[in-house]
Length: 137
Image (cartoon, rainbow, N blue to C red; front, side, top):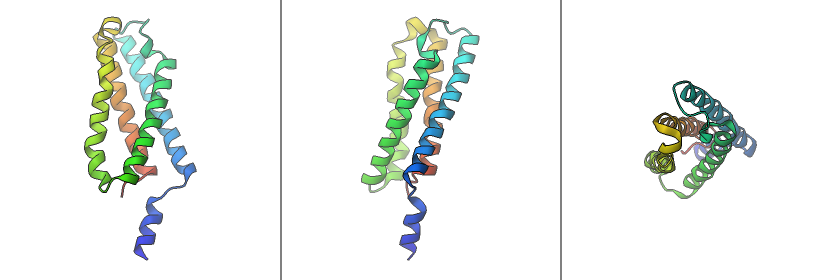
C-alpha cells in the first residue's frame, strides 16, 4: 500500500508538468531580461543580438523544453536518476557555455559573461521547476 502512495505522490498529471515547464520558461525569461538590462547598462554592446528579448526568450524556451524532455528520460530510464542528474545537469550547463565563447568579438566580455549567467539562471530555475513537477524519487 505504501508503494501505491509513493507512486501517487511522485507522479504529476500532464497539465501540472506543462504548467511547471511554462512557469520555468516565464521566470527564466524574466531573469534573462534582468541580466540583459544590467549587461547593457554596464557596457555590453547595444547591437549584441543574443541580449535582445527575441533571441533569449526563444532560446530559453528551447532550452527549458529540451531540459524537461531530458529530465523525463532520465527519470524513466535511470536506475538512480538523482545521482545521474547530480552530475549531468552541471555538465549540460557547462557544455552549453561553449558557443558563447565564440561571441567575445561581437559581445565583448560583458556580453559573454551575461550569456553565461543566463545559462546558469535558466538551469537553476528549470531544475527547481522540474524537481517540483517531475520528482526524481
